[in-house]
Image (cartoon, rainbow, N blue to C red; front, top):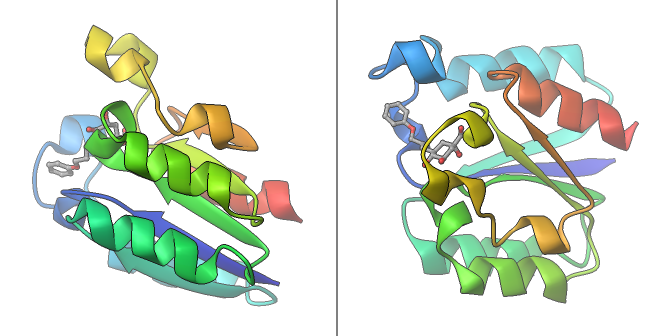
Amino acid sequence: MKILILNGPNLNLLGTREPEVYGDQTFESYFKSLKSKFSEIDLDYFQSNIEGEIISKIQEVGFSFDGIILNAAAYTHTSVGIGDAVKAIDTPVIEVHISNTHQREEFRHISYISPGAKGVILGFGLQSYDLAIQSFL
Ligand code: CA2
């Protein structure tokens, strides 16, 4: 089974700033633990701060991978283009967020990803990604 974890803007800063919201672990170190926990899965990881690169990655894997776990970060709340890409592919997409966006500012209550997603997992810290992988098993 091939699954891509796709992270959007600023998530490369995880573990360096705002630990009260996003925790103190880097994504690279968390990803290593996911790879060893789910060793039976071919797990890939891609992060970009650029909207078009995220769209291109969704198109690139969206007809061959078994799943995409997408945290589009701030683009979640703004990007019609990423939302359209999610709807345009065959691969099921699980939308994840580290924080509970519904407990935060109103602009974070809107998602352009959710209408095309198979499901949404949010508010469990980095464990949101773990739960999303389990949903594919
Ligand atoms: O909770 C999430 O996973 C978010 O997708 C994270 C986004 C935010 O814009 C969404 O509303 C919710 C922000 C990611 C920024 O990550 C940082 C990590 C460390 C330091 C600064 C930013």
